[in-house]
Image 1 (cartoon, rainbow, N blue to C red):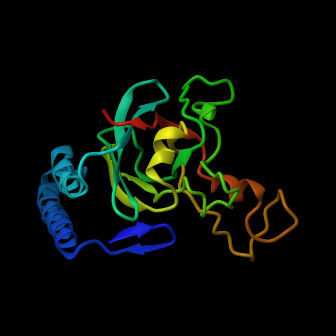
Image 2 (image 1 turned 180 degrees about the vertical axis):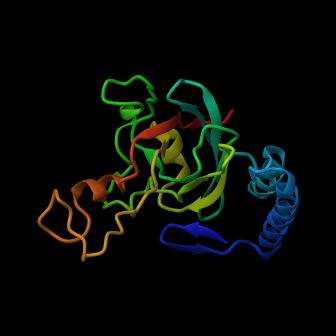
Image 3 (image 1 turned 90 degrees about the horizontal axis):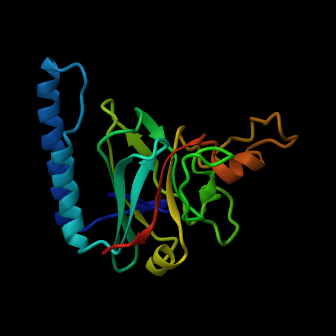
Length: 223
């Protein structure tokens, strides 16, 4: 199943079985190999095979973003596929993503400047949020990206808070952040030093405390 907005989207049974079976096989192979390898990782070609099955179900991508790091090197890509009632996003990084969870969002400006005066990729602006919602409900919010020990990362997720034409026409960017995203889920028993009220403060509601920007890609129509 896929995370979809605030809920869960159940895939077609055949596709779900295919992905679960493929991931199970890959996990089993990886565990066997780990006896001779201190670093467990999912080989890029195997992940590509799993994700290609999803892409084939969805047809050709209608939009994509080539992701660059703060040195200006391309380290991966994000592709978007149109389904009947949602958009399928597929992210693949073969390197450059530190281990653990990372905030992963669409931002409001398609401008990725690693050497921007205010910090890498700050030129991409804030989260894409035309309706002025609090963080966790931004149309640009996506499922967190998880980096493996070898620096690779693979993600397939469904989103339904924006339309394909928005991705193509509104000059947006995809951003990977340095830290995990809390989606502004701060219990009322906590009070920020920046606020007198319990729960998330203004910055958390805006950014999810996901830290600096480590990778950026401008969303463009696929060729």
